Image (cartoon, rainbow over all chains, first blue to last red; front, side, top):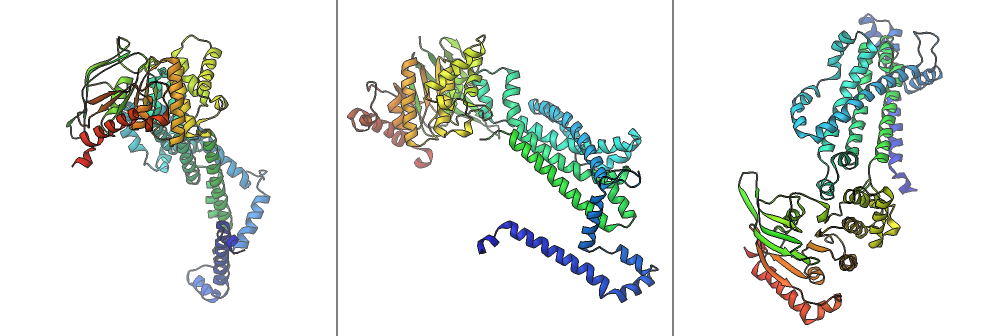
Length: 280
Length: 264
């Protein structure tokens, strides 16, 4: 019995329950015992007491209830101003999928070429190093001005932030194939094209896939911010819209969903990586 | 004419500070057809460097290698190599690994003929059951067997082995040595092998070439191993002849050419 309690997942559940308890305690006590002082403060600040209560951090059950409501109406799309949360998530995932695929189509072939010809890599390296640390959002006004379309702009932002990790890890993976494998090709006289397709490429697959995993994480990270700035749909827009409506519970539900989907994307790419990479 | 002619080969490397380091100094050695030669010496003396020069993976600073009369200008399947770390491609099955090598050596042959050759090579090292397996599914000794099969499959003029059994346990090592002797005797292949195992060298070689300590290693001494074949591993450890070679080689390595750190 005792050693069963030492399982890590038991501790995880305990931490979760503890967190909910603390959250519940804080959200119920501040609106209960401190109400007199709060009301006075609200009057001084020129706010009405009910308004102050609506903007306070909601209790766990309020969030759970709001989550249930949002999920029950997740697929609503009868009214364009009241799109269900599932549609917002789908829009976001669609943009990420498009931007990520474009980045993949550019980064992997280009990275492969850079890895095979180190001179090219050295020539392009200064540009990569300058562009890579730029916050994706810094591109947003330029993208909006250039494309004059918010959806294309957000896809471009995803592209520009997802391209670097894949480009660099593909180039590194291609350039650092183990010497013993290169020697096999040389000793047995494997011709250039076959060497590239059957030795260098499979050898760099694990690095390419770890680059993809980093990129999809960053892309999902950035989509929320990009949609807050320049979109009329998507989960980032949803969170910003709910903030304007002071629907704190909706925002918390959305944050949990964003985290869950990010985790799912990471797990999927990890699985794909395990399947496609060679084993030793 | 010798199968392999190492003619006045020297090798220098330039280190980071731009200083020239001489690894091999004017090495000449002629290896006859179907002769088995072991290169022996302390680690770092340059025996693997010499083997890589023979393979064509390194270009000597001066001197030349001739294989069956032709000057060596790069690697080729006629000088197939068994690598220290088996060097199988982990994303290919055993037979695909052999097939990749066979395909280059027998251009113009049909796919079924090439597959046949690859499978035959694996049967030669008793690995018919591992044909469709990936390297991670088989043991270290079996991987090295695949490495040997791959090298023999291309029918090299000279087979080069770079400490091929170094990472294996003693029992696996002896069974692979027996396997190697059997195949070399049936195929009459010329072999150059790098090893630091004295017993292995005596058991396998027609000649043992000991290199002096680097830097600027030279050929220190050559023993002709006259023991008749087939050789008995146990008898070699107890017979006068075997003990004599062993003693002389040990004396050379530990007295005349002691390991640099021990000498100082």
